[in-house]
Length: 141
Image 1 (cartoon, rainbow, N blue to C red):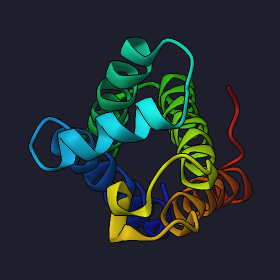
Image 2: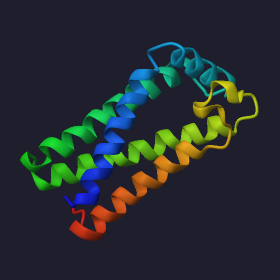
Image 3: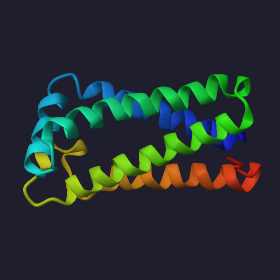
């Protein structure tokens, strides 16, 4: 794994883990609940839990890959890396939708801004992480 991939994995892993954990603590829990309800996502309870747990699991997986990836077989490492980064992209696409939904007030969004800057940055970082790994190490799943 290149130094850039290690840095991206660390940043994405810690960030995703922390964002997931924060959603269990007020005021973030309340803000997140309002986001789910007001954005009219299908199956609100499932959406609520999958967002929190998904972010925590993806964060743990990326941190694990960073710290212990060398102990994994290369094909398992590559698949784990790819699944975690695609997971970030999927979760951030949902966050992008939530930010743009007209019913979601900016007061319950990160940094209190409606433009989906944070989800957009995380999508770009996950894509860059995948691209750099493919470019430098030939991601052979």
